[in-house]
Length: 167
Length: 166
Image (cartoon, rainbow over all chains, first blue to last red; front, side, top):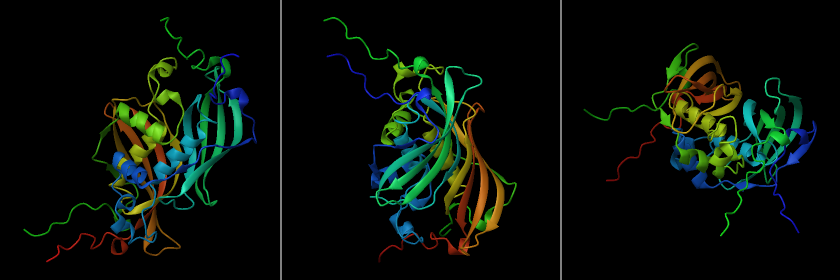
């Protein structure tokens, strides 16, 4: 019996080029996500919140705001990729197929490259390609991004958990 | 007197290479935005929602989720760019400086390329470079984006406003 550490994400040492992570969480897109998100980021494209308008486009229905898809698929990948890191850039983000309300999205990442950071010895740079895939296998987003990731001994969450005060 | 046309965004014909749009809306980023957005997108990086953790990083305070920054800067630009279109891809999305809660973000876009769509005669493709700039002038995001935009005659918002029932 002892205190067991929970999953706290990967550190720089844990990444191997060619490794593929199938991120465990999937997420069903709700109508609320779509309308709330588009309004929150002040995006006035009616394709995301006006069914009357959307019915007149070739999609025929509301289409999920691509920055939301990117945020969700990137988000789903964080527990395996960048929980201990900082996003440096997206090299590209492509939207090969539309995503619709009610569809469920999973994310899968492949490690493309890893190298030490020249300026920050406590961190390294990892490049990954991530795809968002619906439960029916449709690819709704593909992106490549670079992340600056802490080495294990330098990660800020070491000894983060508080000690309970004496009663 | 009479019904006056409101701003409905640009159509394919309206884009000219070299034109720069300074998008009129700015947006102050709130603590709620950062925490809510990060959690709603299942993102488990504590630098966005745990001030204790963030205080131990180089930033010393929560960093705004760059997925939110991208969505916001992109969103602010939609009124002048893709309001009558859809995004095809982003390239070279970079964060030259960190963004923090309480800062106010504006967006500016330059048109790089305009061409007809080969497959869809009712639309064209526009390539643009957009920057996110804080009220103090700090550039917090840059990206290039290709969008497919309707021509005015083919846009779905023509005759959209309902007629009042008798």
